[in-house]
Length: 91
Image 1 (cartoon, rainbow, N blue to C red):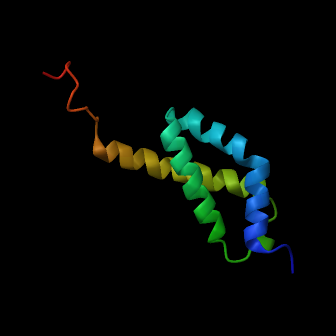
Image 2 (cartoon, helix red, strand yellow):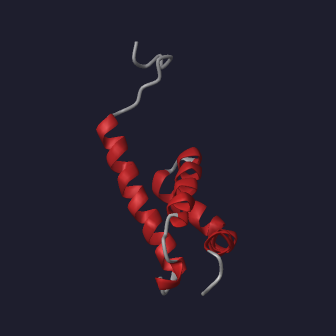
Image 3 (spheres, rainbow, N blue to C red):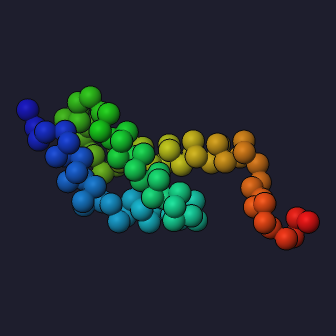
């Protein structure tokens, strides 16, 4: 059996965390969204039942991130345009 799952995922995020954050930021243009999405990617990676069956964990990590970005964009699209209540341009 390979490396314990949690240790494997932690090592992956240590190696790819900055690249993942940059990848997410380039697509969301929001630092807070990118950070939240990176956390969700981490959680989803921890849910993998048998990481030894994945040939390329780096590619899988970014595939999970890409899918999550699509979900995020769909959610944001359903919400419509956000307007702050103190936005004077709306008054």
